[in-house]
Amino acid sequence: MPSLAFVGVGAIGLPMASRLPAAGYTVTGIDPLPAARERARAAGLTTAARFADVPAADVTLKPFDEETVLGELAGDRLALTLENHTVVGGLYETVASAAVRRGLGVRVTPVALPDAFLAAGALPTLHDRYGLATDRVVETVLAAL
Image 1 (cartoon, rainbow, N blue to C red):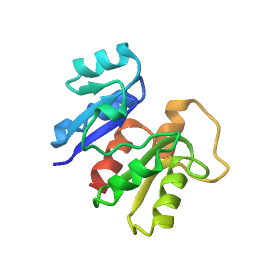
Image 2: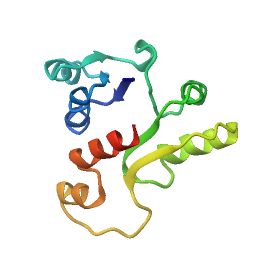
Image 3: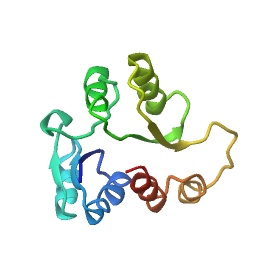
Image 4: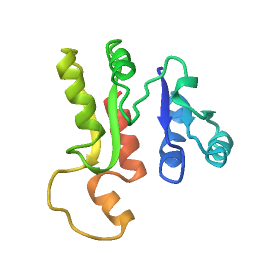
């Protein structure tokens, strides 16, 4: 199974990242905050403060480090972006357009809000409705693997 680096293991990221080891993946939680790394370690994840400290893992990051990300994608890696806003103008578009410009021909899978007028409501309700709730994100990741 591949090793995955999960950038951001705070209140939103940790519940998602902590489910992936049960599916057989080695996960490193990356977060600059010591308290977030401590909670991630308590949940059974390896942690790092910076993505540069994680060898041989899939990492996406903004500001966008095009050379690093495209170097990883060239190795036939899964590219999945997760963002808590519209799919347009975010990390997904940045990664996908960079891959196309480089001619990599890789599939980039977005997990984000659709580019549409969306209903208003409480975040948990909206996350459930639009596929950003923890269970739905984990399903999307596992289906893409």
